[in-house]
Length: 473
Image (cartoon, rainbow, N blue to C red; front, side, top):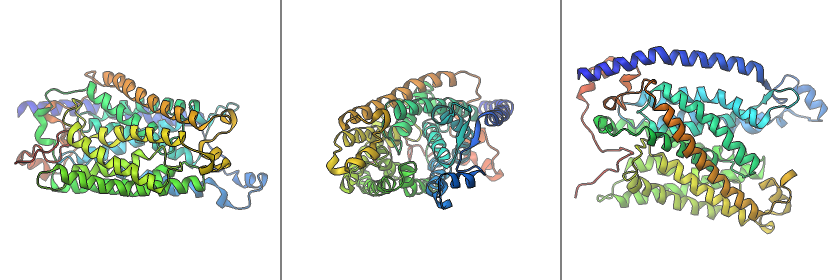
């Protein structure tokens, strides 16, 4: 016990010296960079009155704020509440799950506005980045990839490591997003490829490089208790309810946005049914496993991200959800216990694998698109066959969709391996093996929690996302 206390004190000293420095320096850097580059766009600028007159706009309702803000708020809730509470299943790491999620998102969204601005909206004449409500949505999307990656290393890294991981993650995200959406001209409104596939494999690669052979020393902290699972289910429900907004937030106004909501809505409902069925069948007693209900029920939203705005048809959305519920749940049952990755939240089964499925569905749906289904102008609008891409065929588009998925996997795996090697350096104040998944290392806890810490029963298997629960005969 004395050894554990010394380790905690050493880590706390490390955090006391480094975390405030990183946060202060970073925020000062952001203030300077925003002062140099960031400006309001024409729809958020006080000159909007003049813009309306010049462009013959008769009402403020034409301002993009009124089209995008409801979706932005839904996505924002998903980022800060949905992702945060989804990770509170660990019985002694709720502060870290919600608190570090809060830190990562606030840290990353500022950098995302700059990185995405430099790649997508830098004005060559003024050298400025003009931001509006859609910029905020895209920054949240960028941060989502880093929060997905956080799920793989939850409880095993220090807050400074998380900030470093987010810094590189946002940078890699902006580059792969530019390649996939601008150079390849792939469509990925809900981010199956750009967000989920990249974020999933980025986190998995980092976790593999940071593999801890002695992580069993903190095994008693890896499970959940009744109330921690209930809080995690709050995160699931927020994500599930708002996922139609996530997949439709940046699609075209009108039919594209409308269709994306309908398709995602139906796909998610279908996923719940098959997840429940497979979860019950997987247990000898026929009971449900909360790991599956918290996670696999969301896989349909991930998998339909790319094709959400396509004419996949309502029954097609149900089919995608049907198979995603099965595949994701089977992943938690069989794959999690065979991969030597130490994936705390099981992001391989919720994000990486469904993200790949989404990329495949998007490629097939794009290649199968026809003028009879979309209409001539509808086909042009949906796939943005304009400008340099006006002569692209749907078969070619399908090929580029598949190429985009490959790009996201490569960026995730290679980028994650490199960043993982950086995070492996012994300078970041990460917890010792026996102190993982314990809030006490980095948080001040209520007195009653500290007094009763050693009396926590050793629940070893229940709701451990890395090890499927074994049933007695």
